[in-house]
Image (tube, each protein chain N blue to C red):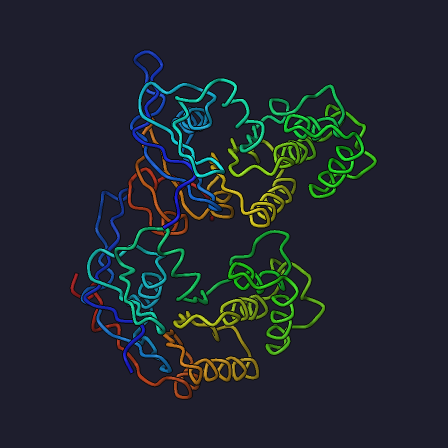
Length: 257
Length: 236
């Protein structure tokens, strides 16, 4: 039996009396894409921030299996260890590319920065790797010295993905990565994510309110409402045979998924 | 020969929470088996629950009661899919159960040949070999070569169906579920699909299918299971 990469147990986050998320438990296994769906305010992003060590939980645990097999609770890691995880083993793709990119430095530097964080010092190597990654995310080589402020929304999002994947992370968190993009731009981005995830064998936790995105990318799905998990299981089963009233409402509310 | 697939006392209903929680019974007491080398055809009128049975066996629909037992042809080990966790179902789909759905779910931007090759890639076959095998199957199904590198979204119904069939037949799953694979095909391509089904049967695959075409049924069915005997709608 494979060990889960991430083990979440009884995770609760309260903002004063208000519930962010409550008693959430699940596992993420190597190479699998888990979608977290639900409408705005259901606690998806709070959950994502807690499991990616960006936000401290009120109670519960999140354990991560390191490359050497050691399983450690995120709460027990030092700040330096957490930061190292975020820069190497993990990626985080924000809905707003400007939250995940440095908008005032070049595209090449955005990709190269994470490489330098893992110890790469040779300028030629960094530039070559950056060029290779820009090509993989379909950004033309002659844009390497341009700053992302000059890029379209879709290009910025692809650059953000390159910046995250250049260190070959094992686990990538994505918060509505296709939100706010035109459908055609969205299709291209989804295709790219799908291809990279399968080529690199990545594990992904993706938060989305778009069930079509969940259908396309994920094998398993969690449905959240009012901070709680109300239904979970195989993505296609939840979409084709939803059991909970709220899931049925979500599925019935879209033209076709 | 012992059955590769054994369905025992399976029951399925839908509860429509948005319609005053009305319960729609679909099937009850579904029991039958399929051995390797057989092609069992589900019979009965439209709406009787044939596709629902296939979907339960693929794990796409949840099962209310009963067991769906899959026997590994090599080890003889049996797994109950009805109560299996999601990761087990995913693994069973990869290794044991193939499924040709009624309609192809096209993925934007992915060319037909890659749609077909994908199940082989996920089983660890190299990209060049997988694409070559996909090319052979699409050619055998008379899909014009000019379409191979195009995404199937704009294909005709019959063309999409052939892509779907090629995708389902490219692997050697011991169990193959077919939901009206010949529905939108012309006579020539229907014969090709029958040939392909017969080749799978000869190789020992257990096939369970829905075919409305009498000529196809007469040619390939080794047995017909009448689903109206299990239908819960009539009783409801």
